[in-house]
Length: 98
Image (cartoon, rainbow, N blue to C red; front, top):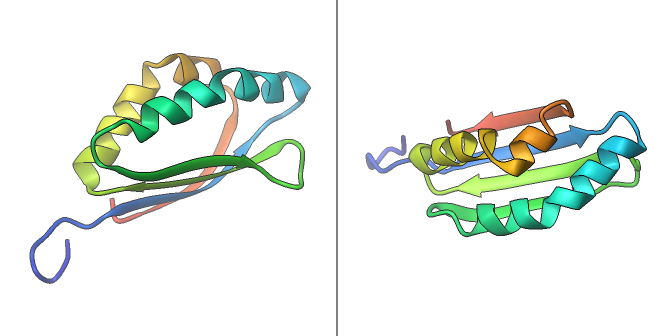
């Protein structure tokens, strides 16, 4: 919480780490819809998932207006097509403000 009592923004940054080309294909297949749905969520300030120079690694950066918006996103994703399809792909994330 900020000094003025308002809610703190939540930032997630890190990597989605694929094991092989099959994982990459899963990410590519489902990514556009995942990004579209996330950016449409109330409280989503910004959301990007971009490939890195390492072919198996994707950079993930998320910014939500508050903890409630971030929590809603996490819960929605868990039951989504993206969440189910990518459940076995490693995530290396750092979350600040939550």
